[in-house]
Length: 296
Image 1 (tube, rainbow, N blue to C red):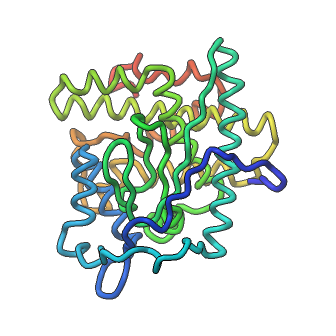
Image 2: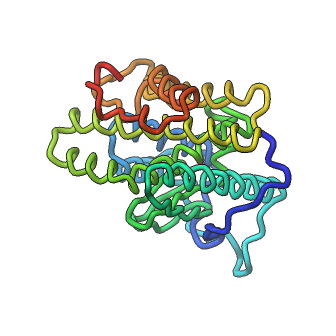
């Protein structure tokens, strides 16, 4: 993905240096912790439980050192982190450009989210969170949260790599912000509160697949506006969608799947809806709520 010379978004809040460090002797690395958190979320649909499992299981407890990520000075990112930080800011800027234009077409004004960088742990408007859960969006404060080490973990633990794969992750979370601005997220969450866990999981899948489609819509317009995609970029995003499917993660973790616990969508579904957004560039094509669960 060619982003050389592109602007970096200023809608950024850097909170690195104020949390707890994951890693250390005798414990699981952050990659393993992230996978545990992701798998727990896919299996239960409970984000808070995913936080707890990643930090409280006997295997992971030792990686929570309770020490500040810095010794009192300003956080000093590595060269790799600086590169990823710049890339993430440019991708965020691209989403701002694309969604501003798309909202204009709908007669609406796009209000960009804030991208929060953290390492180890962070306090969001939705509660405390750790890096083990991966990137997430919080509608309470309209922020996208990310520990940049997640991208390294994508490669080492999930086999997903490439700059456009990373861009897809950011665009997916921004897709949740788009859902929030359109009112879709609030309606879906209100509906979920009235349902059983298994039925609420189905609505959760609709939410996530729509965010995947919106990520595809962003990619379509990013290419049309800036021509930044390179050979292999689309395959990177599709490969990432595949390895973060509920069925793939559950089978990787336990050797079998529990379909009624799916809350993000299968690998096939996630690839399908991203590609739908990418091939049409039409936000109206992402109305997953218009389909029965079996049709997704």
